[in-house]
Length: 145
Image 1 (cartoon, helix red, strand yellow):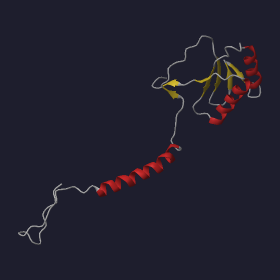
Image 2 (cartoon, helix red, strand yellow; image 1 turned 180 degrees about the vertical axis):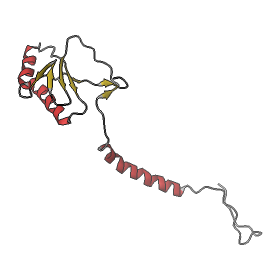
Image 3 (cartoon, rainbow, N blue to C red; image 1 turned 180 degrees about the horizontal axis):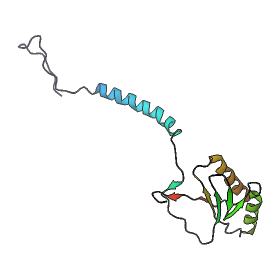
């Protein structure tokens, strides 16, 4: 590294400095890093997410799954039959009782993306209570309709 020493000829004048001072740049970068580290976890809580779109591949099936659907109005359907929310636990326990314990049935849960998250979770809770734990959430392939 070269050092600029004052010469006898140019008394009072400074020679131009050819080195870049990176200390202010490093200071600014460290401050920005700290700001991003503090604010990044706060930003993820408010991110809007559309869960029904997915790039996942289709699940291969060896037996016909049970389809449970919830439409935008909140009506429940088991396969294609409309069911009240009060009867859902009984129907799910009947499905679980008919199934072979070695291979429990696969359940496809189809819910409208405009539904309340709590509504879908109540249905999933009833599935869990009935012992139907092989639940797949059905989505639309991204880009497809």
